[in-house]
Image (cartoon, rainbow, N blue to C red):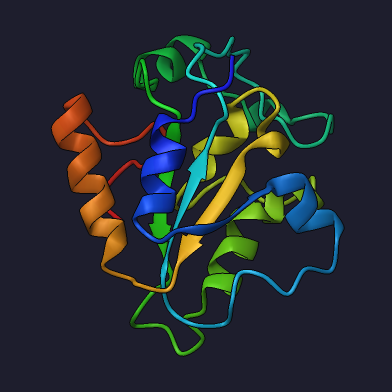
Length: 165
């Protein structure tokens, strides 16, 4: 079942893109733009995923050290939400573009040896993570607004946000 609620809200807030991670890593894509901004990772469903605890990287075998307890992942899941992560380009960084931030998030899909750590890395434990959508806005403050709105609605941060963006 596709869920349009949060996707439509993001479009109304000025987010664009809505491209699958598969597309972002397999094609030489000149998106998102090379400017600061905010981005969101969305599932097209609100159905509860079945977690195995192993990361999903285009069917690559995961090392045991990268596996997490499925019960921990299940407890982190936000029921009724399709938004799974909100991030932004780092304003303090010299190269603080959306493109670099999104490519960093998507890197584990291209390199099975890359470590699964850092902001948003929990997305790789969602089944079919490569099918998640990435949307972005060139307004960096939208990350904080989106997180606050999500927290007000659901009582906590999105699944892969371990702290505020």
